[in-house]
Image (cartoon, rainbow, N blue to C red; front, side):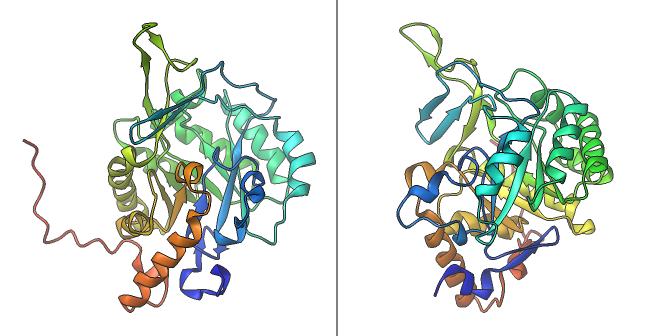
Length: 321
């Protein structure tokens, strides 16, 4: 049985049918074709693919080094290298097989107006939805400031909402004081869903040179190291989203079915797979199988019924020491 045949895994996200709750994350799979060269890999094993972050004009990205492996994850400071929105729409999208899965554009900008213009370009394209990257930690302008300020985040969402009729998914930064407050403002501004979380900001130092290893000095930390933070932030945003029926893609350090199940129970409707793909490109079918087995073992007929089932009433509040 293929993933698409397992009806337990299918679900709805922002009006789109996903065949599984797995989403391949932006920046990890190029423009949807990168891993299709790996024998045994198929986009049909996931509900959606988020394309690489795209800006209005082409960008070369940051100076090297741009990737650094950490003990339990990785730092990246690519800097949104991309060929520009018009090239993606005119040249890359026609090469994708939209029968395989859903494709979600990921847009970024240095100004509110640039976000809106990129959204307009993708509005006239076959992508199924648009993810707003308001929180990219590895660029010097735009994303960091927008994503860490709830009012600026809302301004970007409002502008993009006016520019497109496609479903909007706002990617939230963990590098802010109150992620739930930011989510609330973005809901008011018109977002249809969230991706929680983007990477944490981090740094690595060459002790012999006494210099930053990354050319950008700082970068986004991803991988298993950030999972506990991502899980908490997902649950916090879920409290805001639940009354509105706003779905969440929970992401950050997911590397097996147990991780994915934790995010679903915490309130995510879908789960994002990113860094794990770099060392295990064929991980998605195993995660799907693990989720399916859990649903069957617990008598849960479909994955949507697992979302937000975390039992918190009887749990004593945590206290640090």
